[in-house]
Image (cartoon, rainbow over all chains, first blue to last red):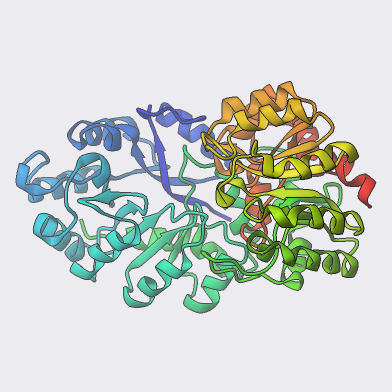
Length: 253
Length: 265
């Protein structure tokens, strides 16, 4: 089975994890050890530093590495720190970047349409997915309330929520899964016994994406959980790689 | 991919005949803040079969709230003697019950010791309210599974260290391995022969298992899942893909626990 990790990072984070990959090459070695074919990646500096700095570092470090697919961290357009939208799109086209990450906790901005409408509209128009950890917060709003806040403003946005935690989030996310067709969850911390099978029996496998949360989390957990999830081989393959590949194929940059 | 025989077996079959997993930290039944697809005894046995878990040592969720529910675990062990052993929950909020409960405990088979949930019960492990249970456990070399969390005022690894010296005959299982305060937890497990690191939730932190094995030794680490919370495959996968040997994986997943539960089989 092919594993395509939707949630991996490399670089030197400000807060040292127990284990991490400093370079793209080290991340590739981690992927080889775990049997992971490809990964959608961000650099620690995209989150811990300004995206102006981090986005450039990421694109430089992964240049020419076919197994690693880049993402860009966003900022609200009103401060003109990142490129204008048409220039940004041109850069995404030339560098084959097909996804955004939002880190509002670190970068301090609102995720409402008041702040991000032009970016949200661009994402909807071009099917570019936005990734965000459910542990992020902005302006006093956090967790699933933040996720619903984003989706209620832009319901057609392709939003991938990562690291939804091991302490029982189904009661939070199931109503949102039912309401928003383009909401996806990564399974990096979907540890709930029978969780993946139960989710698939109710919603199908289309809305789950394989992710590891590397370097913070041990990739072995989601790998064995998915490989033995008591779902069909087809559902397993959808989660392991096909769903993410389909999301990225639909992007019109 | 890593060439471990155990990894290959678990990835292909979901279980390993040579590695019959023992879960030293399990529960049973529904609970407050979480939806469980598989909360019943029968559900848990199905999960255990699927994941190659030979035996679970459990405390019921209901007993974490009301200790009068402890007695029901005796029935579970009686019905499924090959699959379950139990912990008796001590709740320090009701100290007047503890003496009578220890007496009740002493007359029952199937229990390996006590379970403390100090972060939730809001009394520190060093509270005099735990003393009757600890003295009793010390006299009989019983196990005490404690929820432990880094820097907690109720159950940090530093508090475990205090108890480990005071009650040298108690086998202390640091549930969640003092999550987050790894260096201290590993030091306590290394320094005290009667303290073990238990992996529930801790296994997910990338690199922590390698660190524990290197500093405390694989003989001081026990596997657990909080079942029906966490799919055993998640924790097993974390152990399997850590940078350790298959011998060390065997120690963590079953051999150490086999030695601890042997007197209760």
